[in-house]
Length: 310
Ligand code: NAP
Ligand code: GLV
Image 1 (cartoon, rainbow, N blue to C red):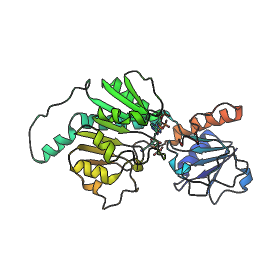
Image 2 (cartoon, rainbow, N blue to C red):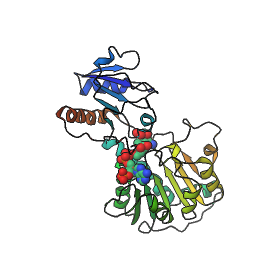
Image 3 (cartoon, helix red, strand yellow):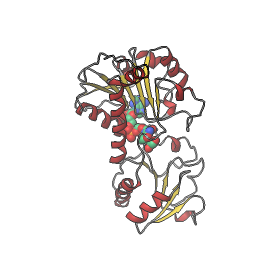
Image 4 (cartoon, helix red, strand yellow):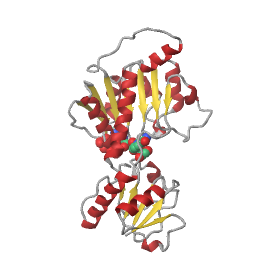
C-alpha cells in the first residue's frame, strides 16, 4: 500500500512508526517523494497546504492525522468523492480530558485568585462552591466533549451539562441541543468548556452575546479552535469582570503574536495548542484498523460528513 504524507509538519515520527507497525507500506512524503500520483492509495494529512490534496486519481481514502478537520474542509479543491476520516484515538482523548479536568479544577477551586493573593502576600480563604453544585457546561459532546463530561461526573461534579447538535444520553450529564437551546445552556453554566469542531455554524460562537448569557464570574476553557472565540469580545468581558478567567489553548493566529493582549492578561492562561497531540505510536494502530475496515468494505471510524462539516 502506498501512503502519501502531506503536512507542513515534519514526517519523521510518522515515517518511523509506520515502518515499525506497517512494514509493508510505502511511506512517501509530499511534495518530493510523490512518484507517480496514480500509485497513491491513501493520503495521510495534517493541515494540508491548499490544493495539495487533489491529483491522486486512485486514492481511496484521506486520513486526517488529528481530530479537527477544519483545515481540510476549508480547501475547496480537496476531493469530496472519496471518504475522509479523522483520527479518533484513545490517547488523544485522554490528553484532552486531562486538560479539561485540570482547568476546570483550577477555576472551580479559585486557584487563579490564590495566585493573585500570593503576589500580595494575602492569607485569605475564599468561599468555594461544592463540586456537587458546580455548574460546568461542555460545548460539543462528541468524542472529546463527552469524554471530558464523563470524567467530570466521575470526579463528583454533580451539575454537568453539554450542548450538541443532536440530543445525547450520558449518565450524569444534562443534554441541551440545537441553536434554540444554547442560551438556556449558557445561562446555567459557570465553567464553560469548548470542544466544538470549527464549522460555518460554530465560528465566532463565543462572542459578546453568548458571553453575556453566561452568569457573571463564569470562566472559559477553549481547546477547540481559536476562531470559535471573538477575541475582542472575550477581552472586553474579562476586563469588565463578567468573565473571571480564561484558559486558552487555541488562537485566531498561531503562534499567538508576541504583542497579543492575551499574553499579559492577568486572568488569561495561554498554552501553545498542545492540549492534546496525536501520538503516532497509538495513532498508527488506529489507522491500521481503519485501513483493514476499508479493505473489508466495513464502515470507517471517524468518517467525516461533508454536509455537516465535521
Ligand atoms: P466530534 O466528535 O466531531 O464532536 C463534535 C461535537 O460538536 C458533537 O457533539 C456535535 O454534535 C457538536 N456540534 C457540531 N456542530 C454543532 C453545532 N452547530 N451546534 C451544536 N453542536 C455542534 O469532535 P471531537 O473529536 O470531540 O473534537 C472536537 C474539536 O476539538 C476538534 O474539531 C478540534 O477542533 C479540537 N481539538 C483540539 C485539540 C487541541 O490540542 N487543542 C486536540 C484535538 C481536537 P452532534 O454530536 O450532535 O453531532
Ligand atoms: C488538534 O488540534 C486536533 O484537531 O487534533
